[in-house]
Length: 389
Image 1 (tube, rainbow, N blue to C red):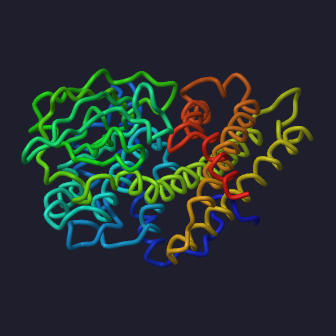
Image 2 (spheres, rainbow, N blue to C red; image 1 turned 30 degrees about the vertical axis):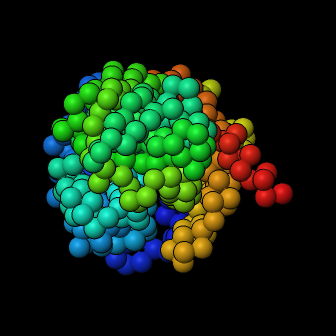
């Protein structure tokens, strides 16, 4: 028999990673999938789910064991991320964990002091601390040089004022890495990142849990900072003005992570739709018997395989320390554009049922659209690529 799209063996896959994949798959089916619909309705994942995930080794898998992580590599993060996607949980916990484990934890690992690493990372690994990163503001999206949230030095502290929006994990986060201007006159060189610990930050408040088109269980919030006093020791990188550089280095991985999510979504959409059209009949024949169905699925599978081949190659480069931001931008825009096309075509083949949220393909359709927006819009990705021409 032909190998299903999702079972194409990635060149970076190892026996250790296969064992992890099977463990994560069983855990999610047993502990998380039964709660998905309730999490969607309440607009946030249960806080206990974070601690469960921590106990199961699903958090901070690529953070060294010395800091409470799993001691693995980025490949371990991807295996976990992909299983969330295959379980239909990318909008429930997968994206939140991606921000927490793959982004926030690695900012701290790469730029934090030893004191910061030991204070924050073990709790993130156990799920006792939930992490978020606050970049976007109402007036600034992908243009991170233009952030207006300020951090003014005042003795042994910074006074933070401003507003952030569209912040993943915003309702649940205990630790928020906030992108601020420590020198408003210096452009990109005036950008810094400070860690705000929500429990000890008078003047910090969370706005509403934003109602989104998709990813309903993944809390996304407005955040407000009104004269929030943050210890100066919470500056990431110890020296002011390093924030923009820190963001640019880490965003390459974030964009590749989006691409892996897109690849998995395409594979799952093709599999779900192939099964459906073989069972569903129209005018006395299975939908799969019609040439149009075959052609559409052939196109979808081809795009899924191209995406998988591309992201696998970039993972090999990443593990070798050779992933460049431009190629990561290429992967992000192309795969997420393809994801939206493929899922849309699959919804069409489901007919009216494809528009019903009880069917996974409908939820995938709603969840897919934001992929072209966050981590830098696809238009910005193309501009970054164009600068190299």
